[in-house]
Each structure stands twice: as structure tokens, then as C-alpha cells.
Amino acid sequence: MPLGAPSQIVVDLYDPSSGRALGTLSERPGYAADLMNSIERLGRSLRAALLQSPVDTMVRSLPSVTTTSLAALKSYALARRAASWGRRDEAVTHAERAVTHDSTFVRAHYFVGDLLWFIDEQSHAEAHLTRAFELSEAAPVHERLVVRARYTQLVRDLPDSALTYWDMLRDAAPSEPLGYEGRSWALRALGRYEEAAAAADSAMRLERDALAPNVNNTLYSFLSVSDTTRALAFARTLIDRMPTASAEARFWTAVGRGDAKGARAVADAETWARGRNYRRFYAGLLDRDLVAARSSLDSVRSFDGAQEVPRVLLAQGWYDAEIRGDRRSAAAFARETLEWVRTRDLSPPAVARLSERIADLAARAGDTTVVAQVASLVRQRDRGRGLPSYVLAQ
Image (tube, rainbow, N blue to C red; front, top):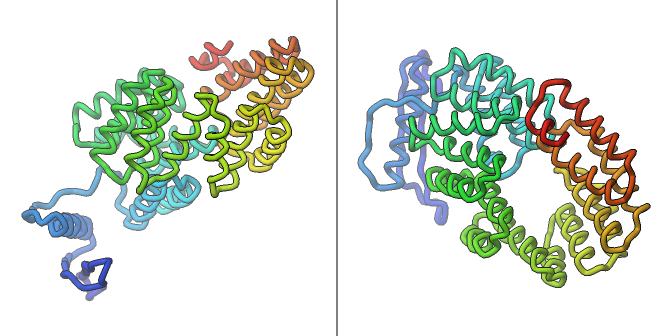
């Protein structure tokens, strides 16, 4: 509430079950420059009231972000909240709005770039991450480490170097959740899955609401080493907060065990059409029900996203080559997957991973032309940069 030059900020605390008022907290900053400190004090007082702990009235700054725009900070906070629950498209909208409010907001550029990378907009992601990297020279050390770590991994394709930055952040700020979350990203990229799961667990213990990235890093680390027992146990701890994790763990456990009936049961219980079609496809292949699998494959094609289409195309092609002995069909799926990759703005690791699998399928089908085209695509995407993922794929 504006009160002339000063302002008043009021927080009312209610019991959500009854609506009964529990108390009121307020601050009256005298100048605009005092707003941030007042908001910080209110947040700390509110936390103390909820935890019934003593109130520390010492002024501390909000998390280290280089912006003086409250509008930008608000949009950034909304982006972080949306991303923590896996709503990436919504998070991108808020994060881009933060950049609009403050074009020099380092952490917002970093966050937009990070989100865009996950939804396969590599060029756009690189532009924001590069801008964040350029602006980070004038940022606090903590923020500089965060930006350089992610830039190094996503733009320069060097997860081992990125891990060094994340380790520095963890050692300098042991209570910073992002240091552990970042280590988990880098460790997964390096194939160090046990360590990745441990780092993600530490991040969740420090920031309970940052679910999506840390749950994914933990769950897929366990699944990557075929540790379905730990994957299921972990998912059970999240049944009330993130039930989708339980379904994912149960589905891939069934697939790994060759349990077509169990896989189909999980798929049929899925309420999200895209996820249901994707899972039904694998259940159909597992059950050698080609009619059901092909029907689900066509549905997956119509819901193109998250690299699901190339995965099912390659799986169907491999099945045709190895189980049915239909090399012509397998070659056709290899060509279709290659065209899909050509038209997408994917990250170097994604292009490399898919290219290797396309070349493998084409080789099984005896189509050396596609193998040569895949090698050419990898060279074109690398553009002489010698990025590790492309070098390894070649």
C-alpha cells in the first residue's frame, strides 16, 4: 500500500483448513531502496512463525541475483516455481518476461537458456546462456560460478569442466541447493549415475520443493544402471507429492523384466494422452502385438515432443530388424528418424546419441547410404568446433 513516499507491506497468515486468521506481519520501508530488505525480513519472520523458532531480525539480502527490478524478480520467482513442478513452457514465459523487464538480469538469461535447452531449442538456449556468460563478469562470484558451469556444459559441451565449477560452488556454499543439482546434471552427462543420484538427493534435502529436476536426475540415474529396486523405493517416497515418478518407475521396471501385462497396466492407467500412447507402444512391442504397437506409434507421431518420436521410431526399427528380420522396414525407420533429427534444433549430446542409434539401425538393415548421411549430419552440426559429443559420434 503506497503511503506517500514510504510504503507498507502487510502479510496475513491463515490456517488453510479453517480459514482462521493466525496473525499479521508488516513492514514500513521508508524508501524504494529499502523494499528488498523489508521483504527479506518479512520472509524470515514468517518462516520463524511457521517453525516456531526465534526471529532473527538481521537484514540479509535475497538470493544473489543481479537485478534491481522488482518486476523482473517477480517474474523470475514465478519461473522458478513453475520449473520446480516440471511446467517448463510456463516457466519459459515467466523467465523471458523477467529478461524483458531487465535485459541485464544475469540469472534470468541463464534460466531461460537452461529451460530452452530442455525443450530442444538449442540455438535460442545458447544465445541466452552466452549473454548470461558475458554479463556474469560483473556478477557476484556465486552467480558467476552458476552461469559458467551451465554455459560450459550446454554451450561448450564440456560436462567434466562444468563439474569443476559446480564443485567449487558446493565447497564455497554447502547450503546452496543449486550446487548439488548442478553436480547431478554434470555427473549424469558423464555417466557417473550413483554420484548423480546422491547429489540430487542432497539438493532435495536442502530445497524440498525443487522436485522436477532432482527427481528426474535421481530416478533416471537408478534406471540407467538397471537398479529398479532403488528406483521403485525412491518413487514410493514421492507418491503423494509427485505420483508421476511412481508410474515411470513401475513402467520401466516392467519393461526391463519383460512384463508386458504390467507395462500395459501402467500405460492404461495414465491419464495424460501423450504419456499413455508412448507407454502403450512399448507395451505392444513387448507383447509382440504389432497392431497395437503401430497404432500407438502413429499417436506418438501426432504428439511430437521431448524426443519421444525418434525413440519409438528407432525401437520399432530395431524390432523389425532383429525380431522380424524385415530389413526394408528397419531401413525406412532409420531414414524417418534421420529426417526428424535434421529438422530439430537439438543439443550436441542429443544429436550425437540419436545419430549413433540411427547409424546402428541403418547398418543392421544394410543401408550404407543412411550411415554416410548420418556421419555427414554430425559434421555439419559440429561446424568444425570439435565438440566432444560430435567427435565421439564420428
